[in-house]
Image 1 (cartoon, rainbow, N blue to C red):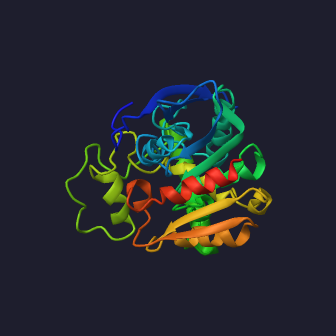
Image 2 (image 1 turned 90 degrees about the horizontal axis):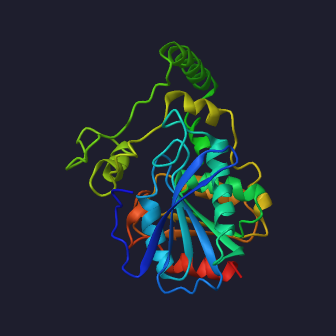
Length: 313
């Protein structure tokens, strides 16, 4: 447990926990709650998922630190093959396993004596927004879902490519599997440096420069979150659709939170169109995509508190 990007609130307790998903992979998490709660009572609980490639010590700890102070029990976690969670080889990603891990978090929370099983909600940041929604499509124990700067990584895997480009990408990834098989391990090329930079390299263009503004600087740098996944991980995402059944979350509510300047805004707008009521698209003024990771002056905590307290009844 290192490199939390915010200091823990003095009134909040954080316990490191480990539990297992249905594949038998150990998941490392942090459980946050107010120090003055009565553990003989039951409280509403939230799960906060990290951005795609991120870890619990980054954006999730910002959300958990604040929402635990507001009366929720909050669980953050590292996805399998990431951070302190188990899974080999490292930095592999899977739309199925990453979705399943949200259900495993629900399992864990439901075993805590001071958590009300009927009052469990989920917040997914960036790529976890897609996984959280996908999980809620089938796991009805999740009673309400909020996303912040949501990405659907299965859509992103094909974004901007026509049929010819998609075929070429499949060819490239398929040939990479021969290389991986010959080497005995999968190729992984990190995007960010081992140590934080003082400033973003001037030659970078958007949105790459934006990712560097968070992950490569002291603001959000973490040695377990160096960006990207094994090269061939993308094959799974090109062959998977996360949100085909988003309409089946209804009548459970969805809150989509986006920055007005976010390059990713269209992901939330498209998901919002496909979802059924009750749903809301909430736009944060003067906010880019990464601002909803850690900017406490931009993240609408009052809105989140009201949404979950109203819907986890």
